[in-house]
Image 1 (cartoon, rainbow, N blue to C red):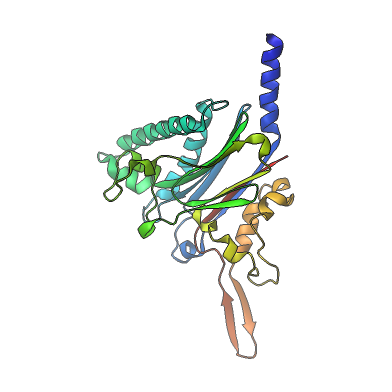
Image 2: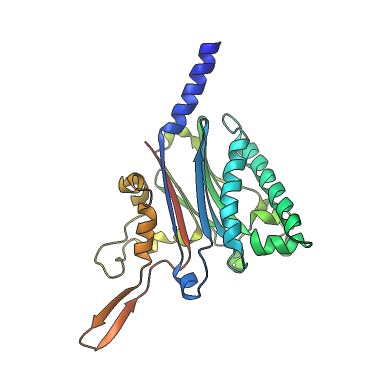
Length: 284
């Protein structure tokens, strides 16, 4: 019996050790021009039995949503791992994690303000796109808009009518205009045996139109932007923890040149209008 327990634990540890993870985030061009912060965030954690990774995008009209997005990534990852997800139905795991997140958000909102609705609107409106590899299963999921890919097959989530994505915190105080409470629950984008996974990618909606960018050239350079697949296929993004962020920053750098014939300065803006965050996972 002891041998069986030890083997099971060793097998679980090996399941998490066989994955590599990298991520990065940059402020979008539009936020930079208005002096706003990057309202995206990402976080992942490997436990002996599971790997959870999440990206969050704060509501653009909320004054402090970047704080909520950063908090949301950690709440989501820790809530997922505390469900002990290995071997369980992903639907049940995600719903249990969602309830944990909502309990924490409501508790903080009530501690922060006499009007918890106001605190939630100002701080805790964020979308979630995530990946969970637990036991023998891998699952991609989301509440709100963004992008995800498994083995190179990309799924775009959204856009939503009037640019109003559902936020997980709407599960506490649903706003007017959202009739379907199911919109505030996790949607499973893909669920497959972990042994079939070669690569996963999750991203905020700033990366949702990457196919429009991949044939463009980097500002001030002749190099192509390239496809999303670079982020899970190129070793450099996993050997250097900052490489993905730096690549996004190069895409979004303004290029300034002198047109001598016209006698004027030419400015080429960065390519990423919105805050952009990506996390890539691949088999080691």
